Image (cartoon, rainbow, N blue to C red; front, side, top):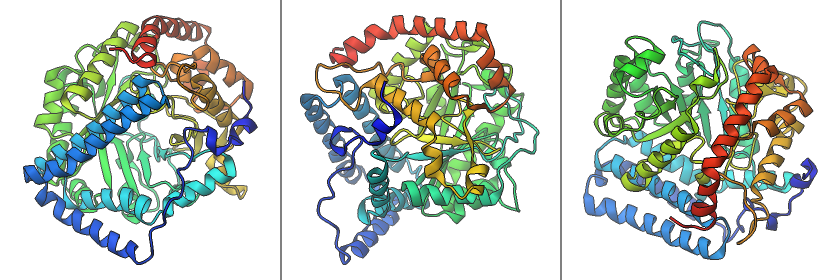
Length: 513
């Protein structure tokens, strides 16, 4: 097993995550011109995007380039062939989302402006953000995290069955100065332009007279995604989101009316539909966040559900989470069965490949994300909750460090990232996948089972005992110490492996259909 120091000292030439050569610098004279061109395209995009030939002339070369590049990478053997094809399919789906959004007038000018200026202007034209990432790599031997997930409050106006955060009527929240500083350091130390907000309900956050919308408006050089139950998206909230353009909501649903109201409360489905109508009217990019349980796994991705949200309501993207037995009244009985997980895997990739939908499954799409991205993995993330507890992932509720203590000690986010518990999990990711040393014909870990806590619980529990991070709440403590929970998770892992092991070898390692 490699040590933390081993991976922090990985030579740039040996890592699949290393920085690209600097190449030719963009001259100072060309930067303002490029910026003006981006602003012009952002202003004109919503208009010319409705013109089919122009739109296709912009999108199709992008798609062709991705597909040609994929075949070259397969020939070079830089990753398993099935992984490269999945990553390419997800990239193509993003291009199709942009095409569909422009064709149907779903993307407003402010959103397009923020997307282009933040993700293209900052990263590619001025290279200011890339230079920060290069500096991080020079110091630590790998690329920094790609985003930070913050849950600013535990407060929520709903009481959903099995909520992983056990949210509700509580005053627990991050203080505004702490929240604001984390955003600033994420950009200055890691070069981040993307922040994810979760909860609790982010729109319920209040501190020092500030809300998450104020956070978004004060950080115009960042782009935000927010997981929300949607019930607090009023006309005024939708107008602000449409005007600002740098926050895209992912609204939680469990399917259509009956399963959504069953888990989230009577009348929630109608409120969600009303919120989506407001967002579409203001041309705000929005998506859906769906949770698969044993009860709804076989209907959640049906044509009826997908057509309703993606066609009728106008969602442009979707996230799919499998119920994780953590949080309020956790139980293994709500887990989708291994057979259901297989059907979800088949159906989700069918929607990506055949319909061009961007639908990312937090577990089954591990092949498109280079496996587990938690614990500050290069390009991945860390999470910070309402009490300042930093954890590998919202579904791994064990924290070795609190951001309040870190800042009080004069330290910063780099010190958080370097914590031994997070480093140990990053080492596990690298050792499991063998991604740093992979070549054609060599071993590679199964990225259809990428999650340490969900798919490899025995190994994760051993790491937990080695480092003794603090459980975020009593639910997490109870799960950690419950022998029946341990036994049930290990049995689940073995059953999933029996199904997905052969799939990994055939489809991904050998590249067979």
